[in-house]
Image 1 (cartoon, rainbow, N blue to C red):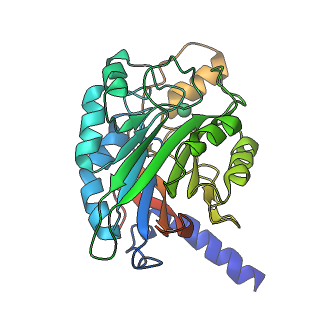
Image 2: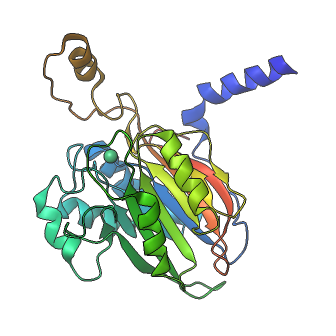
Length: 300
Ligand SMILES: [Fe+2]
């Protein structure tokens, strides 16, 4: 029994790239909102796999709403107006950012624009460019009318340099502003797994999903918490997996071995999309189904 299980786990690991691009399960409920959270899009390989395949993925999986963390999309750090536009054109509904939000100053006017589709961490100082939360419309279909979807993002404070406000109390204040919006998605951009778990438990029953980002490594703890909040400590990276969190292996290893400065160039092989797929009941805002999402360019 134990042996068979062990063999199956090995098989799963060995064939992950070939078995993950499967057909999606039917929606948990006919009128559910199916949302995809795409984990940190890294550099050109990350944005190319999104722009090339997202239209097909949206159709194939019946996805109604897409959020993508793209704070590493410009050469591995920051985002430009061109990349912002390309991601929206490909079918991303809302772009979230993190600690590298302001790396490219050219994005400031877009962050400050009226009706943006891009947000920066809400616990940055209020004087920072842009907004920390937006409410968008997910279009209706023959099963349900259009739904308002709130998306917000915040930075964690453990092992993260920026001096940001307490993310728990920031969340309380933000949610108090949107009593009528039931579908609420949080991208919690944090380094420490414990801090993400604290956020998940704190917001259980208050938001539809808490998706962790920033570490670029997906965690195997996707779950629906008792109050109906989807939770995953980190949804992973969208970019080259033959890498150290998206960067060329040799350069990073050499830097750590010798202390010599090195360009942490973005790698380019084994490009995948990592994320999380959730079905949300539009009336209650609770998640009723969740799964990890992996899409590999060379998957079958
Ligand atoms: Fe980050």
